[in-house]
Length: 309
Image 1: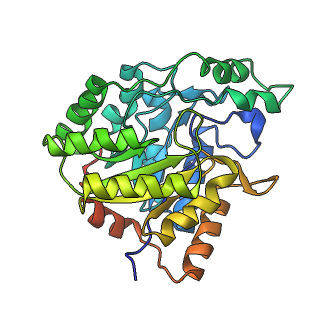
Image 2: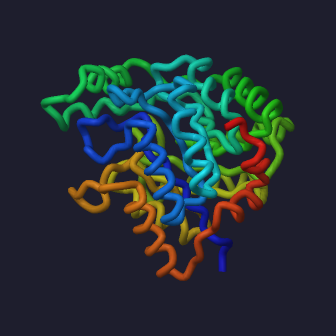
């Protein structure tokens, strides 16, 4: 039997907007509650973004993060993973500010510059709660998400080498795995690597069995025994490909960041509802869920006591 399955949950992200679901966490209290509930439902890792509590717009203000991080740490055991992605409209300095302030155990790290197209979501709505929502979506038609080699190395230095964070390496295509392997071979990184196969985002690899097998084969060839992987897929493909990822030896990421539904045409009422569903599926397949402490041990994390919140 495979190792216990690590569940990651990204409770709010920066893709969806308040108009799209009344259940999307926006305020610090919302984000803290959603994180704690997801942890209690079985998520070992909580992947965190922040939002402006008044408008719901994605925020990289460290003060917004510090309004929910201490409560999450106090009320659950989950690994805190702070995004360095933010949104494509933020500068690198803005995107790194929350993690530099909080010094978490983990940070996400997109392994390359890419077109990150969420503008098709704009077609689904005629009325918006906030003016920024359609403008942010449309901006992704012309503005790529930037992570140059220099950007990636800055993140390695400032968060990894200087502050002891480990990374959730977000790979949206096979080229991102090639880049990750190059940094491993050049001595920038030490295993174990935690690689997130991200599927179904416009501009990245599609959500199909062939795509997943290709990502896994590339990682096996390039990273060997130095990595573990997890699978997430955008939109309605989330549950299907997470399950397939478990079957071929991976972990899962389940959340409102990348999918607002719990079933076809049915909005999820919480992140915990999604985590509970994948947990049922995983356990009925005969697997066991990893605790936060087990995830810390497997991923060689520095420990929750070595954070700055």
